Length: 236
Image (tube, rainbow, N blue to C red):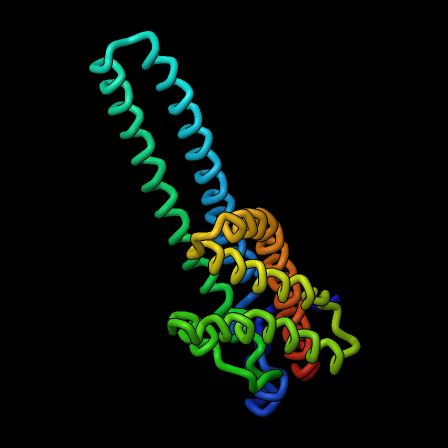
């Protein structure tokens, strides 16, 4: 069986190249990009959990120290632990920025692969418009849910594709949960705060699964295009 990832023969006509349309990124590149996102994302979650656990432990220990020691000793104890909390907070900021950057890189690459099959937006707009205040509340639906719908459209038009479905409903749930958690964060009502906490807990899993499904779908489309390109190479 021919390897669909081997470089095409040098005598392939330009017209055949254009028709076949090699994907702008390889499967290896997409998997590496997703791995970087996954490590940074779960690193962020682990850092937040660790910060919470340490903060609770400090509170409990401070209560015990306050009963057994003098105010000066308690103050010295707190100064030591505040340095630890500061380090954890800096760590959270670093890994959260990395997770965001790697997530946007993935989004850009997904849209770049989909360009022959969609007119919804370009890779640059898909990422760039997410930084426009207020408008990005709408655009996040285009950037993610629109991407999932376009992948579904591609799969409906290419019945022979082996690419898995992106689970559009899951992606839509991710976007809605993200907006709920974001809006609840700025609310001052206790009910909104509770809703935000629940939305964030659900978002932890839904966001990762949505990204994984999208990544697998795009990898499948890249493999489709590799097979198309290989079939356009004239046999000797």
